[in-house]
Image (spheres, rainbow, N blue to C red):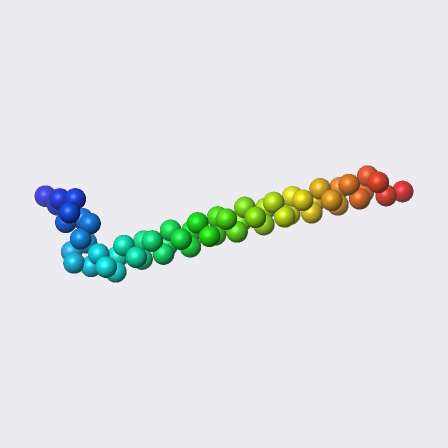
Length: 57
């Protein structure tokens, strides 16, 4: 049976595996942050357009 230590060592490849996981998580987090920021910008832009339409003669 595999112990936790064996799992963490990844068969001797831990120096390659764990940084890869870290980089993947970093990219996913950056993608999430970028999407949320873009969503906020689009919402503000649409709100400004809606205000223009209601105030335009």
